[in-house]
Amino acid sequence: MRTSKVMSLEEAIRKSGLKDGMTISFHHHFRGGDKVVNLVVGKLAEMGFKNLHLAASSLSDVHAPLIDHIKNGVITKISTSGLRGELANEISHGLMAEPVVFRSHGGRGSAIASGELHIDVAFLGASSCDELGNASGCPRSENAKSICGSLGYALPDARYADHVVVITDDLVAYPNVPKSISACDVESVVVVDSVGDSSKISSGAIRDSKNPRDILLAQQAAKVIINSGYFKDGFSIQTGTGGASLAAVKFIRESMIEKGIKASFALGGITAHMVKLHEEGLIGRLIDVQSFDKVAAESIARDQMHQEVSSVEYASADHAGSAVHALDIVILSALEVDVNFNVNVLVGSDGIIRGAIGGHPDTAEDSALSIIVCPLLRGRIPCVVPKVTTLITPGKGVDVVVTEYGIAVNPARPEIAERLKEAGLKVVDIHDLAAKASSIIGTPDALPFGDKVVGIVMDRHGKVLDKIYNIVD
Image 1 (cartoon, rainbow, N blue to C red):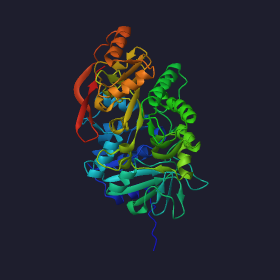
Image 2 (image 1 turned 120 degrees about the vertical axis):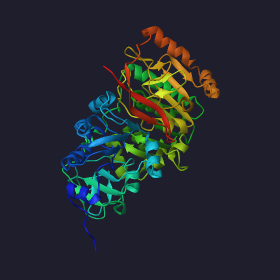
Image 3 (image 1 turned 90 degrees about the vertical axis):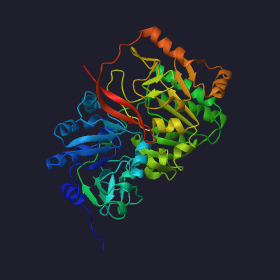
Image 4 (image 1 turned 30 degrees about the horizontal axis):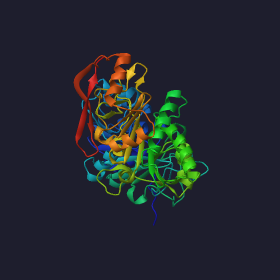
């Protein structure tokens, strides 16, 4: 006999057995349009919960209301991949007693699967769900209000959490198939007015660019790929979300068509750019851990060759079947790169947390060719520096750094340097790039960091990589 799991949010929380001090989790597939975190934490505050550990796959500008819940003791610990906006600013200035723990997407997946990050109750937003809990990031009815596509970052939570609550704004007839989350993993279903604003899933770091400098960087990155030795029929690729990284795809496309080269798969956060290449027959399959725009979200709903993948299967260092182990080329952006090829993508030049680790260190370490694209300067801020403010991606995993002043190749990859030189590209020493930046703007003043640790950066293998200290105004 079928028994509906649909109930109110308060009933679902009470049924979950949640107690003070436990860990709750969320995903960020709606990005800047997410409404689930604020809704649930607001209800938990209303019900009197305290001392909770919030383990979100990432947090954004929209989550500023968490500031009050931290001040009131509802949330006393956070684990995440990234922070942005006013919440990040407050935490950077020392808002929390305990430091935020930052993990890459692959690192978070591994930590959940191993039990290192134990989740008591997962609250997972879904674009559609039936009364038993079969849930998807794709809408199923004419009355659907939201779409986010892949639920890759929610899948480990659904599988390993002690109790799972699916929150949806589209309750559909059983069975909701194809499904991302199985009813077997779900205890409660909550129907709300809206789980997210789909128009904002491409907000934040994801951007197309018409900036001439970004276009130049994209052209140079494409030339690096084409002449690297890895640009051949059947190669695989992932791109970051920065303007130059996305634009590079357009230039690679031209060469693929010209040379008759096709990619076997594209990986990671999938964008409309990748969907276009796939639909043109230039990319065989799309392996999607997060749909980065509505075009990608709609594609995954209709195309069997566009497949959802969990963050564990995407980028875990501990699982031999993780897709990153088969990745040939990745194009990534950076806030800073230092002379040892270490990369910072999390802490800004002002010492404020303003980004996310994402899959940066996962893909850089495991890909055959990792390319960092960044300008030498952003305004009056150097991007190639003697030492990064915060270490996120160790230099041993970075092969090439592309700037408008030249291309630096990690000394550990001399064969790449030789191929690029033979192609007529300007290969320079990374120390010279740092010196060039310094000669243009001088040496920036040291940041006014305090002595309070506000963030701990974990590497993808579960060890402490760096610490972030509070910024003092």
